[in-house]
Length: 328
Picture 1 (tube, rainbow, N blue to C red):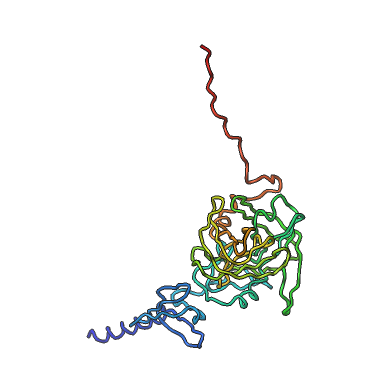
Picture 2 (picture 1 turned 120 degrees about the vertical axis):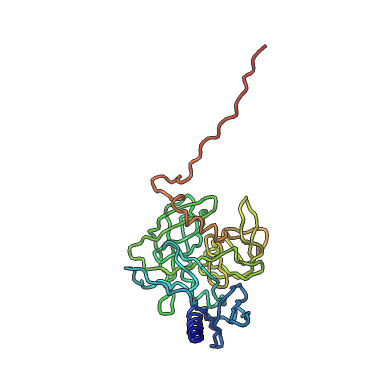
């Protein structure tokens, strides 16, 4: 009497396993079904039941999770023209920016630049220029504090892709949302009435980078817009002025400031902000973890046009206690 029940139980278990198993799609149009145990930058480990397969990352096209339901669309939110599609490996954070939740497939710089280049912009002020990148389709973007320091007249130049051509557009209604002088970060928003929905890029992880891993920067060095430079991560913990920075051999020059430093998955891993002028291949970027902290606590760094000194207000330090000398 127990045997039929055991058979039914086994069949149910098999059906449940198939439903919950992950599928790893490969470049040769093959696929591996099993449980993904680990995802590293260079390989994926998959348990297929009787053994564990190690699959090189460069052979993986896509990972379809069997235990994660497809994300439901937000009620009342329609797809907007010109907006970038969010990758399967990223998820929105409070509807403000998109963060990677698992490693995305590695691609070439050629493939990535054509896909994410439109999200990188040029930031202009009367005293100079820098770079920046969009966080979401509503025109919020990141740049360096020193790019806009002391300025309120800011414009953002975007290169929209239309029918395979680049259409340069300048937006002059740009508002300062938040500033962090000590982290050298600024959050801006394009508020032009005719502004479209902008393409944006996801934020990755600087912690997940390895020394020697390839990265690339997009920006406007010396005003040469849409310049791409490639290099490696020289170190992840270069201390400068009490802060830790990513050091990279990707060429960084004046005008790159505020632009993104990407990994080969197309995720922002840092914000380029300085270089050693006495040498070459000595560029630095603010780790993206610092950027995410700034964005998650942006209300604390909110900027007010009525009080340009906000949010910094310093009090005079107390003077040392003076000992009164008593004449004998």
